[in-house]
Length: 342
Image (cartoon, rainbow, N blue to C red; front, side, top):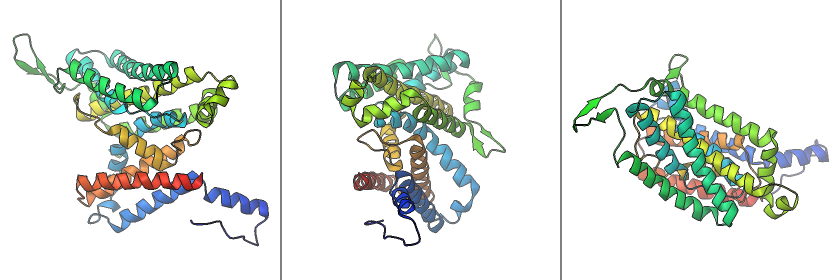
């Protein structure tokens, strides 16, 4: 919508102001964008594939890992930060989970908490360095991105961690895929809802509760809005940054476990450029890159938008190069829309 809304005589000034503000809100913009994407799907249906339930089910499943990463990215961006390391942390956790579960035979009750701790530690170290030394998040998270990717390759020996296990004499034997892998990769309700999608929705709910119902959520918004004022108001800025980046690492670990289960292996090369998809989801949803504004509901809409765009392009056999270029254009457009609302 361009320009101000014209005055509507039948509405009171207060109600007219409410409608004007509602139509300028990020949630309205994101909802309209999602509606337009669905319309595009109806028009370019891929020979009717868009009209099948399986297409929508698969779109949500394929976007779920990105959405889990975006939950943590939302918290970081609200603090006016950025995290470029989540894709590499995902790979490190995917490799670690595969080694612990497939090669070492650890119980999921031990392997999963250990992997979650690895991801959380990576994020907390990043947040601690940013808070303690006041270094730009871009630089610190870029360093963690390189370090975590290197660690993933180191612990895996540069190879995929699969069900082929090398013995002491150098020969390979094959083991069964752990039951926890099958459980995470399974589907419920007559194969209509994937477990990974349920995990994503659980991450959305937990993030929403934290940001909107808990004190630390108000602190996160305060830091993003004005860090100096937040510090003078008694907000523990350093601790909150450690918490924010620690949560991003935790969600990256959850995504890494899901990725390993879906691929049934730990690939040290997995997760490449996933951080860009997570940032795109957050920005397209409407969370402001300058910090202080946004929310997890917007990220949910952003996940659906990106997921459906990818699915529509896929069913219409659009080349990957064109998909990447289109995603770049969409990100720039989303940022320009944000600037108009400021």
